[in-house]
Amino acid sequence: MFSFFKTTQESEKSSGRVMALMNQKGGVGKTTMAFNLAHAFHHQGKKVLCIDMDPQANFSSLFDLPEMEERKNIHHLLINSVKELKAFHTSILLKEVVFSSPEGIDLIPSGQELSGFELTVAGINGPRQLILKKFIEKYELRSQYDVIIIDGPPTLGLLVVNILCAVDGVLYPFVPDRFSEQGLKNIQQVVQDISEMEITTTPKNLGYIPNLFDTRRKQANEDLEQIKLTFGEATVHEAFTNKVQFGKSLAQRKSVFHFKSSDYRELQEQFMVMTQTVEKELHS
Image (cartoon, rainbow, N blue to C red; front, side, top):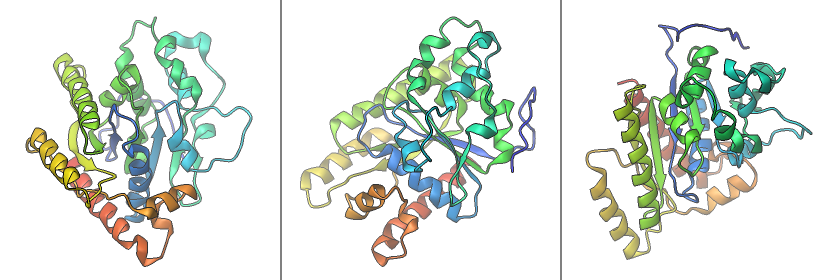
């Protein structure tokens, strides 16, 4: 299934694309979007890898991993990939960490250890911003998968910088309110800082996703239109309303694609349209 091996540079023929879902503001449905997008790409016949980069590990929990007393996660793999941190290395292989869901989507889970990532790598001489990028290159993950989806933490810091330096593009879920809008502005400032550092390619803006949108509230419509004015020419995907189907599917740790009921068809079609738009942008 896997053919992981070290390489000094990323394969020239790598076709896989890496994307993340980001917002400094929590509670905007970022993890829900990432989970359902992964299944939408899978339904299009894509080989998908999910990477959970949030210490809260909510993304991982949706995959309903089997219980283990001590589960190794992305934190251990990232530390193992840094030669200067040899004293902290653990005897764990990538294939032992990757979890394959019954549907065929692979996951590199997260864990609480990731909250100490910034402190652990503080003393290294190499570029701390590029640890995740170099990890993806080291194991040629782009050649193993068509799409790699990263769920980031609702914070600003070294984890977020690592994600933004590693991805080709970013989707920005948000709730149409001023708090979520400020979270988007803060993330965009980090992207701008990365661009100015010129240490890697600046990730593309894959668009904004209005979520938990209440069409019955006139103020919600006005807030959305006002926020759209700050996005310039960036894509604004169709708004996701606060549907009960989302709650039902998440309660069962399932994507909307697990259900054959017509109640879920609209959501399924909406995610499929989004994946097509995102894929076109990633390959442009």
